[in-house]
Image (tube, rainbow, N blue to C red; front, side):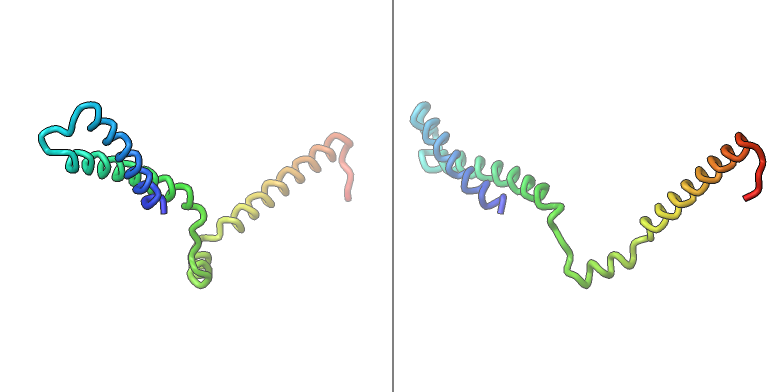
Length: 112
């Protein structure tokens, strides 16, 4: 979609600037039509290239796989979330035990 929009904008800009350049400086040895078409095609190619890249970047996050492929992709991924939860639980338990040991040692030894 970005390439088509860029092509249309580029053709229009190329026509405007090409016409202005031809009116101001003349058509040159190749003639009016060849000079104007070169301006238009060069401008259209440039605009369509950059707008196509922009539309790809903009819609990159919106791309979704079909549901069956998304499920297969999730099954093949390593369990990163479960691993992070396990690490967090281990860290919290270690801190809790350290606090408990500090509180027991500061109040003296007592059995729970």
